[in-house]
Length: 268
Image 1 (cartoon, rainbow, N blue to C red):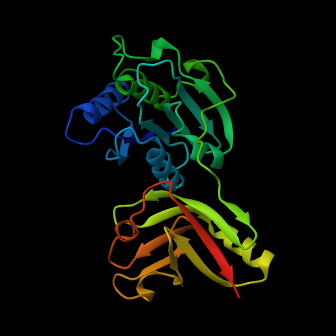
Image 2 (image 1 turned 90 degrees about the horizontal axis):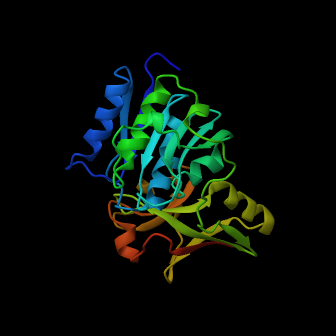
């Protein structure tokens, strides 16, 4: 392990209660040398899909060997497992509820373990705060150099997201809204490369986007290419198609929610 290991925290706990402070206290007590970075604690409560997306959007910008502790856990106290994943570059600790599905599809998994060894939990366990009593101490002990093998048996499976994948059908791409950010931008699951595949397949170049019975024809490089309030779509910073309204909320204008369908269409 590195001399000053980095633990990145992401939860849906908010910042008004004792929850986040408790996680940090547990980590600091076990490993005072650990550095802690907060990704966010303002995920919508119980929203596994939002947690999965935020983690996916940010993890690759962290230094190699960062330990990610992710607590979005509507199944706390049930028989759901806690998993520890070591990938080629990082470590991830989370409830096995699908919150790691996007990053584990992206990363090369070296080993995946069920976290079961009570020697690395707090002595007194609560059925309602396993993030504090089990996951945080495991992250701290891992940061001190305890090997992954010590925390529990190896497993070959983890819970995957049931979200639909984007598909090319004839002269269009059918996708869905993955996430709505604080500006009201609609981030889809359609990657840039699929546009190139569609254009190559059809021999057509002009693109439009259809969503909620609205057709958007402005496909631009950035928000500044349209007038204030005008709808557009573009390739966002994650390499995914985004729908936006300049200095306004596309989500409000279009009355869209996560999971809604959208289509990219090619024309002559």
